[in-house]
Image (cartoon, rainbow, N blue to C red):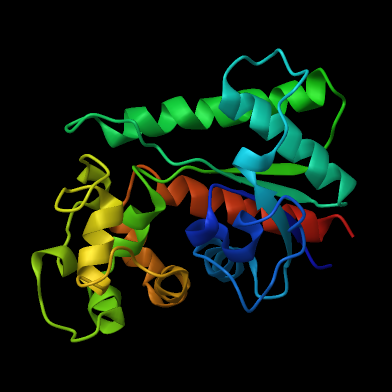
Length: 242
């Protein structure tokens, strides 16, 4: 059985075409972000991917849970159920952090909001998706993509060794979201395309396709292993319900 997976993504670099339009539910294999390659590598190449950008999910009429993350999870669960999906993957970055915060504590805080929203969908709204996976990178998905230094250097134009291509603690990166800071988005941009204002979506997809996931897990221990293990288990469970 092919697992049918619904991706609730934060933006274009995470989900490619799924992060562009409210109507973009069907995945476009020619326009993907970081999450589709990661999902296939962890859940199997034969998965069917659907999805939508989380900030385009309507929140009207949802009073509980009050937090916007939980409310969007509930809406994503509704769409996933309507699409006949077995697995819901909800992507929420652990941002709005302070330098020096414990990544594991920050991860648990956001992951619990995802679970609260899913519980609300099942209990209060009687909406059932068989499996939910919290995709909660510390601090942003760029940290995962920076973890494998060899893959980053291979993706860069010249392959030279620079500080941005030699990150050892990607979950500890943080700063204002502006050029020149240690914000993961800007570290990744400087690592790949220092002369451009941002990294391209295709760069995200390429790194997600080529990074050594064991290295990513070792260098992002708070946030990547829970995603990896939950997604593998969810995909296996979905295939087992034949």
